Length: 160
Image (cartoon, rainbow, N blue to C red; front, side):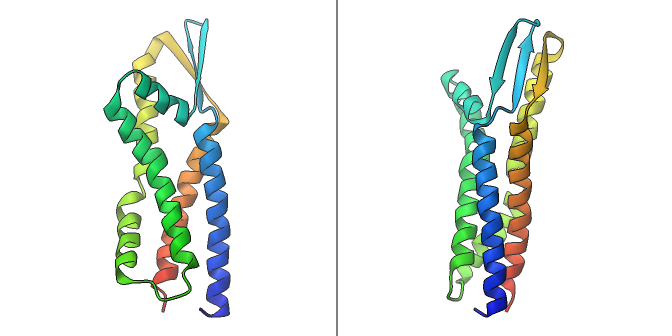
């Protein structure tokens, strides 16, 4: 790798570290508080919401949201770190995997989160109010940063 490419790879790796930290904080930080009948408050994070789905036996939603909101983002970050730290030529299989991840994985996390919030909002309607917290913004920032970094990593890796 040339010195310029090494600097670019380090820059992308640094941003990946930031996105990893944002993702972890976003998963565990409260995203919203639901107040029912002005008496009962329930705060939820991604991890507590997923745990609640499991506890209530809603296994399909549990697997779907856990997969797209936690497992795939972590796998995407791990693959990006691996591809950016490889000093040798990247094999065609890993290039194809990165391109597939870039083409189809970019909307997965964001869509699932938006749909989950819409479901909660529509379900509760007039019987409850929802207050949004910083966890939603932190998680959303991590998702967007990972999408942007994937785009730049694809360009970086496809450079001669």
